[in-house]
Length: 370
Image 1 (cartoon, helix red, strand yellow):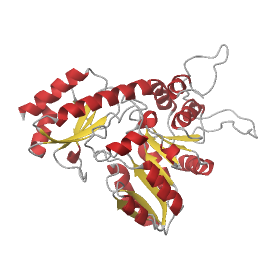
Image 2 (cartoon, helix red, strand yellow):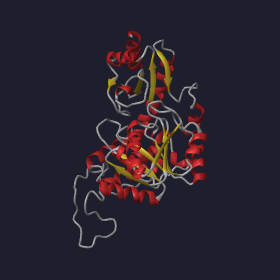
Image 3 (tube, one colour):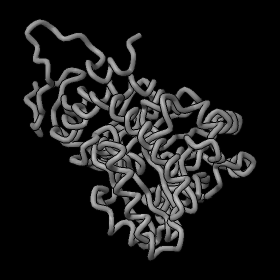
Image 4 (cartoon, helix red, strand yellow):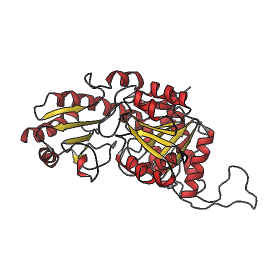
């Protein structure tokens, strides 16, 4: 069995003599085929494309799944999973799940007869109670933007006992640091836009699963909804995947160092990062995350929302932008988005690949000024 770093670079198959080392970019939307196509042949890009074969098997292998379905955005991948919830039942999800997914579920699923139950996923008793009558469980760990940690092993036991399939938003951790399927999850969802693409230049999502039936349903929904990825974006994601292990491990180490420094800053009242011993989910994170605790952290700026916004505006190196996981370091005051439940003084930081002392000096001068 090859190591995931090797799989990320080389893929799952052997190069043939004379074959190109760099995969080609597949842009065609339609394909020549006989009157009776053979299995595996392509006819129209929405139903299938050779571009997917460059990325989907590699993601599945790194994550520890059997199949992968790529979509044109992370939210499209999440919506395809949420469609697994059956009318007359309930969907269980964290109250602090990613805003876009949580709002989408609360707005649309009740129209289809699905009750949405928001719970504190760190409270296993609440999760167990909410699973009664549920047909789907959605987990997220670490969460966005409060970095709460769900105990995947225990949630897996509860879901198995209740007979409820469950999926995990694994975007923050990436397949390098965490494998939800190893804990019994039906599938793992990623916004490939973030760490896997890694360069803030594509929009894609994916679901990796070990359940052939689930993969077939997800692929059918992609075809029916027209949420397939384009060939160039898929090629960019495959290229980004090659450096994912190196980038993520570096970003995780830098995030830990910054979290430790920020914990002692007089202008910071709280740091949210599972790598800190004082984080309530630290011990659980140590058991289910490998090679680091991720490149994301959040802080509360002492003095409130206005001072937090002033920090954003005074930073010169940190880029004030949404999204995360790229080579550049980003920071954002999440409460600037209407309806976001994050505290007004919370800043979310996505640590990039710049020199850590440069990043620290920029944060320090901005925080000290306010």
